[in-house]
Image (cartoon, rainbow, N blue to C red):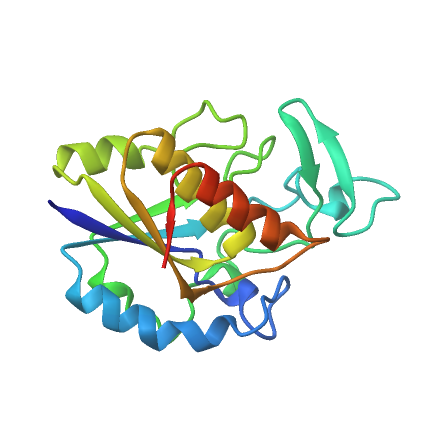
Length: 198
């Protein structure tokens, strides 16, 4: 059964010193490199926001990072400005062996809508093209690693399961943000969707 490794958002802004640093994010890079060398196919995702993106707290007067707001597509966490197109923070972690990737999926580039999932923007309708690529490659099973467990990994894994892929998330090669219990909720949601947490 052809299998792909999906490496989610291992970018400078999510690593220590970055605008939206996830605790311990840099410690998963070596293990991900090892996995990429052994994988049949490798896809990297990259958060790729235009400046002034609607998910940034700085785009909403009087709002602070990590507050919630309501968007046309539903509730949205307002984030610190991060992974702005072309900025050092949007670049992959320097130790990530990006040459091993078959494809890079850039997401969150529509200024009006955020995009956590590797498969769909946050309206759950607008596709990124990843599903079509995997089908064209005959890939039927997915393994996911990266950042952050409770947001982009979670949304990607649940969408993949809904699309019919057997999905395994390797927890030791992910790190979470954990906003107000979001990590536990995400783990439960992934289990409920049929995702294997290994």
